[in-house]
Image (cartoon, rainbow, N blue to C red; front, side, top):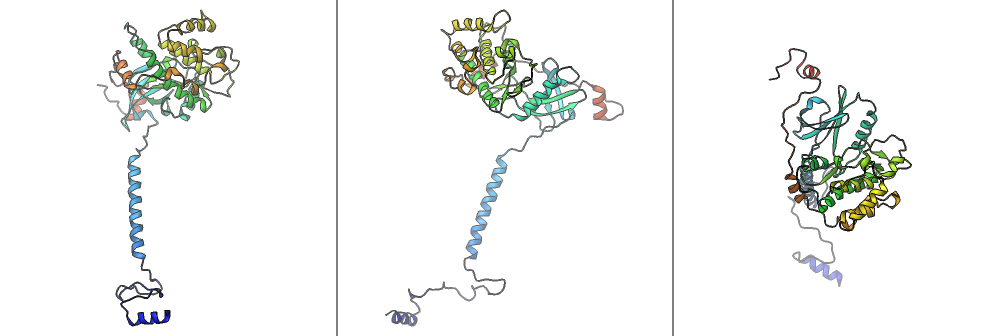
Length: 376
């Protein structure tokens, strides 16, 4: 029966036999010439089109990905790449200037540290080493550093509002307290998140205070000044910190843990609220008893006395557990913080360009050894 069916299909070419594998119908003009370099592949054209479409899509995605990623910002490593302006801060052996990078047109702050001072070189090296290895949104940004004559220049981000201590000093004439408990909760929450990152990599700040907490223009707080930062395994003595915010175990230098920063966080919150902080007249135990009286009517002092200002470091909550405390459940919004701080008298920058301290070397390097130009 199969033989008869195939024979009938052969007599009628308009029908195709279901028992014989049929070749697709192509004319002689469409068939490629078979040879050494040409193989008969009737599906080569669709494959090529699909491959071209996929390549076109990949190229488009690559261009889109490259365009979405901003190019890396380059920072010069010499004094000729910056324009120096007003002095915005002074320390023991350092001066902070407002500056502008000529190459990328970015506003920054340059911390100029005098290398000729005694005893400060180890602190400077420690600060640069620590800041260059850390990168977190709640830690002060470090861009680059270089040596100019007898100074070390450290290029950092510039924060217009300054530190929390600067804000308190500018608001000293006002009778209204600027830092409410909700605002303190928002600021300390940011600092604690930066501490979580810092402690995770084995660093201890040891000098947390309002002067080392900077405020961004978006209302978030940033932890700065890592000159006193130490590694957990570092047992060398000779730590220089602020006595009013220093943990009790740092005085005896018996042992050092990450929970020493938690004591400083509590004292910083107390200072922002307007209450007196640790002094040489009172011991930490007496001060803790004083703060416990305020804890009955204040959520801030209830948090401070229950989890931060504890004489035994092992009883203090870590930075990770501090963030989960009920005191941080209702922080103030960042926009509200910006509005409140904007009412405080701001620092006015004259934007008057300052010449480098070693004017003769600067003119010789920038304009050659000839006659220096007039300063007018």
